[in-house]
Amino acid sequence: MEHWKNLTSSVAPIGQKITERFGTLNQHARERLGQTNDITELPDEYRELEQRVDALKNAQQAVMRTARTFEHEGYDYPGHLQESVTYGAQSLSHTLSTWAASATKHTSLPHVQPTNAPSTEPRTLSHALSRSAASAAIDLGKSPQMAAPHMGADPVPTNESRLGELLQKFAVCQDEIGNARIVQDKAVVQSFVNVWSAFGAQIQLALKARHAVKEARLHLDSKRSTLKSAEANGTASAKLEVYSTDVELAEDKLVSATEEAISLMKTVLDNPEPAKSLASFVQAQLEYHRAAVRALEQLDTEMSTTVTSIEQEYRASRS
Image (cartoon, rainbow, N blue to C red):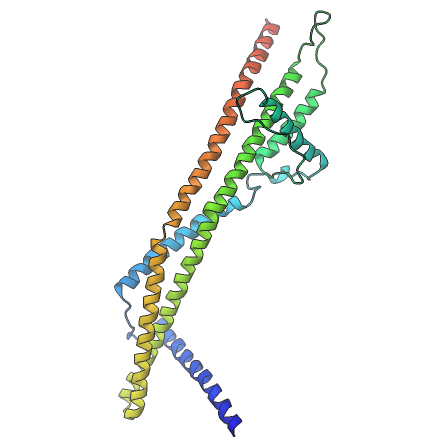
């Protein structure tokens, strides 16, 4: 008998929860079908915050759909250029660092130390251009130079050898730009994508709290409907008192849920991190483009003399 009492007492709360859930679902269905107009109005402040948070949620999702691109290194790397990571490709990277070290040896630029061949190759378009140009420069470097017009003089460089030198410089420049882009991407992911992802999680907490408000409001209106029907049917006062108590408890639950949701929505709306991280995004892009401009301006200066010389020789040979 004692066991039966314990079992009954444990099942009762479950049955009560099922009954309450059924009442909430029934209230929701009646509202959707337009069978009731007796719906509890939520505070104007709550409604306004809902609209503002929805707009913020849409903005966060719209930005993140494209900003997550920076999490994938090869976003600008053409699929048809995909290379297998071979010893030859790794050797090219080592060659590039050696060329870069040589190029900065007697300049005011930061000195570059040659590195060991990496285990993986960066998958960016700039790095792919660098490897292609380096391979081409090595091939052209094997081309024989013209014999000097006077015995003992240095060989005369051919157009192929000078093109090879330009490709070498181009390869070093593109490698530097590619490295700067990877630095940018890591900064964007850390200071923007991760921050906005966390912000999205914060928005979801506010939305979850709003769902609790909706459930509490439906529960309250269901209890009010039950009390109203009981009053109309002349139900005994003892039972009416139970229904009235249920309504009061549901009202308290709705007030508590609404206050919590308002607090969480205000926290989302007052958060300064999205704006700060967007500024960090711009800063990362600015540093990348500045590095690219510096590298390209240096390359342009170095190329101009060689290109002018080649053009002058060409015109002279045709006159």
